[in-house]
Length: 315
Image (cartoon, rainbow, N blue to C red; front, side):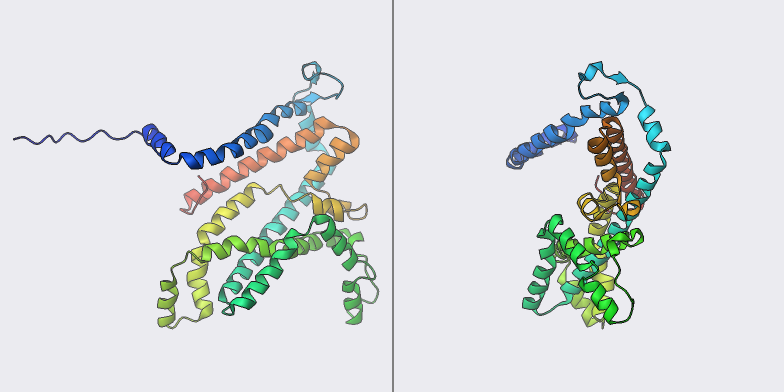
């Protein structure tokens, strides 16, 4: 009696894909509304990018517009004001990126070390609350606090650090620091959620073994908790690098004014100013196209670098 040694046919990638698709049909059906929303509101409007290559006039039909090629992009890249806008956008994005990561990770590590559950919940709740305050209200609070009669000036004058009250939002060189501090106050609690969730996936046995070996809290935090958070940190870093030109709109628009415009105007304000304010839709669309393309390049570059370094990646 001979035994057939012919190997069983391998399941192809396509067959395996459809097999899993059928197995997860409920999840697929749940994702259909989101995919439709994504297609209708994110991909269909991409036809509007053609405006960047036209001398767009709102009263004319789309195909009756005058095509000017890359002329709008040439004008934008040679405009000194655009260079200033790019500087502000990059600096504010980097400030938000660094402060956001450092403060959120630090707060998550400290909260994880709290043993009093009730106190931990109170601290978490207090740190989360500012995230749910609209930027309109937040800007009003910041403006009041930083006014000449605000609490910041009263404290600094009372301590003798400054002799006269300072109108902080009228000094452009202070705007980046004010924005970074406000972003941290508003979002640090919310940003810790994902880190606290990642910490719960770390094997408690590692902490017990380290404690038996004589490791103190700081050493356990440094050699167990932080390495356990590393995959999450890398993924979030890739996503944030992909959004490096998304420095925000509402805080800059609400806290910015004519006296700090040299430091507060970013790419989104540039699009609003030229698109809605002046009516130069071609220039504002070109700026939006530029931001999207650069974000796309940054995202794939960061993901590729993470792959080459053997770290976690998006795809």
